Length: 191
Image (cartoon, rainbow, N blue to C red; front, side, top):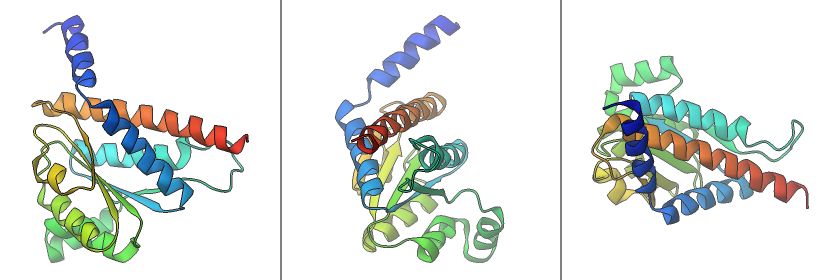
């Protein structure tokens, strides 16, 4: 496939995402902002990098001004290597996100879970815990969405059987979301 063909394929993949899901995703983020809730972002492999990137973009990239008091509060649970390795070694890798949520999360907070397949055991376990403990959950998926799409309160789904391109589309959607969130925050602050 030449690059021109790939660009066409990528654009069709972006177009396959339901715009209502994108708007709902943005609304859930804005609700977290208005209610000063923490957004915990989780993922494995390439999605772990996306989780780290999205948490940083939410916390910094959405600011309207440097001295802005009210801000998005987002943390990636993929970044504390010592905690993750201790949990993985002592309790099993499937616990690494759930156990961090037990330490840090409060009812009303958000768990944003990114999983191409939607079937990663550590993601599913974290979402099940979050659902049972009063958190709002969002599954960002590819392929058929797996179990994550079925059990999350909100879904942002890329219906594509291609991990690399699904992850690329996730990141395009995340960047669009951050740009739109910053625009909405600026509009609110300027009132």
